[in-house]
Image (cartoon, rainbow, N blue to C red):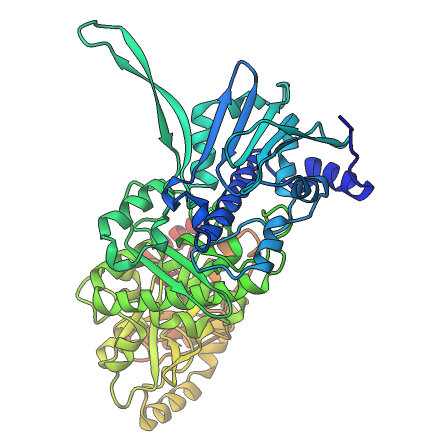
Length: 629
């Protein structure tokens, strides 16, 4: 029998494929099963117009036969088979694809997917096998042929005995090494695992004879082995079924099995999209965040299938970061894959799918917010902070997409567990209200206790309570909502004063100019200014900030590893109607040393009110004791 040589280019391609193209050796089984499925599809397609085929759709199958004694794994199918010429073309010339030619020459019905595109998947077998033997008989042919190769040295083709139409591929596995355990591909559990992972939704049954031990009736402790032909794959993926055929229980069961989450998902999104790119998708919103969700170790991504064959376990490009909590899968027949079927050749298709998925997820969350507030609140507690990061990320590029999904605590909510949306806040605004007011702190209680928040509430305005570090960064990125600007109650002009109030304040400020200069001198650069306050009602003092960095943002930034010594432009504000102010005015002429102590004491108090650390607790304690005696 003549030994034939691969072409020089083919030799290089084979060597490259075995050592470089495929990331994981285990995908050889995916490739061979996909080729077998293609062969069956071709014969099934012919049966639609040729009555002589004599086999129905339900009679097609793929079979796996592991043999531990011979160290062989056999993959058989009863598909269309190959002639001698097709053997030469498909297996003798690497990267010649019979499947691609078949798709070009025939118009397939919508239920026939030919998976193979490049004709290289077969050669992945050499990653695990030292010799590959192919026995095949083409439909309508009287002669069967055998192709055999040990890799780059070439191949042989000869006639052989094979009664039935179809193809049989025998892999003689490589010997085990310290690093590679090729014998695993002879284990029933491993083959079952790989079929479930990569080929669960091949349209034809993938069968294997499996053995099971059962107790011998009446003989305690004794077992007998039974063998049976087991179908390893599901065949019909749930996402290709009509939604009205499926129950919530079936959706949830698939979620548990596929994504290893014991809890039921909060909701599922099942759709088929046709157009520039045609695909099916089944997405889930988990009810709880995974334990590692807010860590660097968490990997986002959806499972990506091409015509029912899994290509990627986690395709990160299908999900934006702000929806990284979504789990699920996408299955498309239109993907342009590279020759290993492990990566996409072009990202244009992915971008189109990702954009459509993003819109779909946003719409479903908006619908949930409107129709089931309790369930949406459950979602928000698990993943709300991710949406806020999404608003802030990329300089606010996604703020319009996400802003109506945000929830905030508010002074109008009945309890600390209550939330409001921005839309709801605006709908309750007074006609004369200029701003959306908010207070920032580490809890609802602290926000509500801020002196400035008290004043705004007393004047009849609602205050949002921002209790997470990213909150203020997010609202500043939104800048305005429904033409209303956001206003921190502890920063800048609150817009609550009448012209008469402003005039009176200016007069008092002019009268107290010397006092403010003396206090600022005493505080030695700790504050940018000392001034009279329009935001204090019962308290003697508070801190506010000028500029874009607020006091709460200062705390958040300083807590970051790269925060450094970021500091807001602090302003010490005094309540002109509080008795302490009169004391300060008197000390300006009677005891400037004590005025300096009082100034420092008031500044330290203002820090505590804002939830900030005092600079020297020991010195503060001593100063209080000195003043008391």
